[in-house]
Image (tube, rainbow, N blue to C red; front, side, top):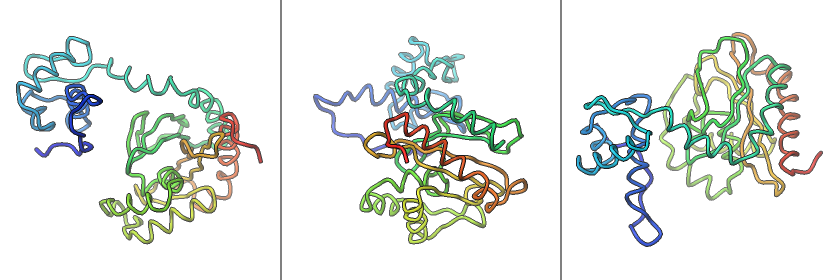
Length: 265
């Protein structure tokens, strides 16, 4: 079983606590395809020795973040404290939620907010509509940035040299018949999102799923997150979404950005 794709660790030193970094690697080794693992599986996924993995797992168990039935280890709900510490430390999400709820009531589709983490977006807020959606996304969910509307909006905020470097490392994969798998075309889509201030992605990530996104900016004009509306192609076409849902989305994004200090129109 190959180890997960963790960031390259810096050399240990006065400013780097290797044992803490290894503990985070153990936590990250638990994922949807491996919700519970044996000691040997954790060691294999993280590149640690069995003894090292065991010490970390038992420490996490003592702290209440991991539980075990003697053979299998799994995370406990207490691990959510770590993620919610990030959310609660940023007033943006407290400000955004009522605006997002109003937007959902208006357009009758789900609304989400996400931030960029490397080549992925991470969902930090989601307000569901009452309609049944095929995709079951929640806070903390990750999706590839290049084939999502929020991802392209967030990538558009990067300097061109940084953007080009990231696109060079993107593993191109055809997720649907509509997926853009040419790097030059991806760059053009992202530059278009930068120029127009929004992005619509039509079934590139999942068949039938259409989404449109806009940036959330702070006082300095920096994009700190993205806001989107997602819907199903069998209910709303891409043209209808752009015509009917993009205007209220842009208004909601502007309202949240102004709360963050961004200048008004």
